[in-house]
Image (cartoon, rainbow, N blue to C red; front, side):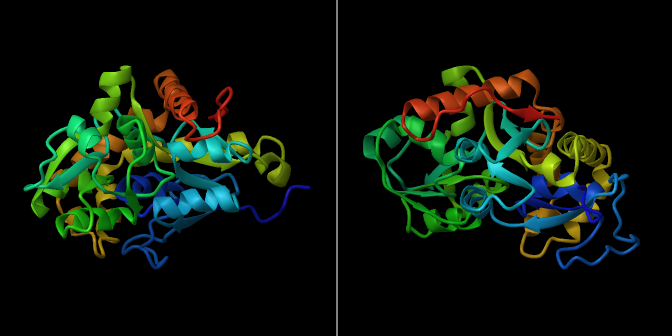
Length: 310
C-alpha cells in the first residue's frame, strides 16, 4: 500500500555544488530551516506529492552512513563508496560530479622537498585525506601504487593540517582546490589531470544515489519519478544562477569564500554542469574504469553492470 505521507530524506554535503542542486525541491530555506527573506520556503517545482527533507553532512559521514545503515532515501556519496553500497542503492543519472582533466589537488608546504607525483611515490609522505571512502583517496591509492601513511579528517581541516605541519601533504576537495595558495600551500599533483593522462577519461568524484526499495515503499514507478524530479531540480537550479547565489549567501556562515562571486561561479562551473544534469555514456564509462581499477587492486568489491536510473 502506498503511504499517504511521502517524506523523502535528501542528504547532501554542506558544499556549494551539493547545496544549489536541491533547493527547487526542498524550498529556499536557510541552514536553520527557516524560509529565506522574500520566500515562502516552499518547493519551486511540483514535487508530485513528495516532501523532500534535506540532510546536510560531511561527505565522509554520508559515505559511512550509506555503508553502515543505508537509511537515507537519497544521498550524495563519493563515487568510490558505491561498490560498498550497490546492494541497497541505485545511481541516479543526475547529481554526479566529474572532473574533466581536473580534480582533487595534492598540496604541500612551500618548503617541502616534494615537487611532483613521482616524488610522492618516492618519498611517501604522510597524507591528510578527506576520508578513506572518498574517490580522492581511491585515486591517490592508484597513483601511489602501494601502501602509504595517512590520516582521515573533515575536508575543511586538511589545508590547515598541512600548513601547520601536522601532515606532510594533503588532498584537497571542494573549494579548497581553488584557495590553497592563500595558505602558502603548493600543488604537486592534480588527481583529475593525472587520471585523464593515464586513462583519457573523466574522473568520477561524487554520485547521487537512491534506495532500491522506493517502489516497494511508495508504489510502482516511485523510483523513476523521484529520479526524474531530481534531474528537473538540477536543471532548474542551473537555469537560475542568481537564485543559487542568494541561496548560498543566506548560508555563508563560516564559508567566507562564498562571498567571492568569481570563485563560486568558477567552482559551480566545474561541478554543476551538463554532466551533473545527466552523466551520459561518458560518465558511465568513467565509473566502470574507476571501479575496475579499484577492484583490481583489492580496494573495493567488484561492480557488475551499472544500475543507473533517470
